[in-house]
Length: 97
Image (cartoon, rainbow, N blue to C red):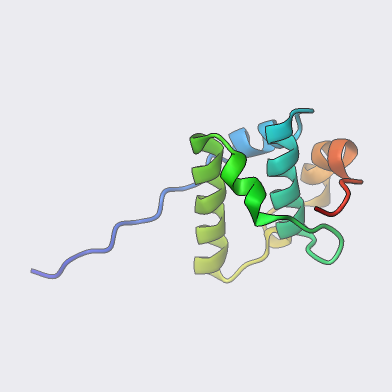
């Protein structure tokens, strides 16, 4: 019998985008990660921010990273600028960490 690899969980996209569009410390942290994955030349993230998140969003972001890694994609290939607008309006000028 051949062992099978456990499939990575899929991120809860709606929860991530909803939280990132909120004016909270957790929303700011999630937004920084998403913005950095979407446009790393403009937005940066301090990975320490991940350690301050609640378990659900933390695992969703890890799952998102796993999907991007597995598919060899950048977030801008999956998400349009229109979809990023709520996050950009609120956090588009997030200062670098």
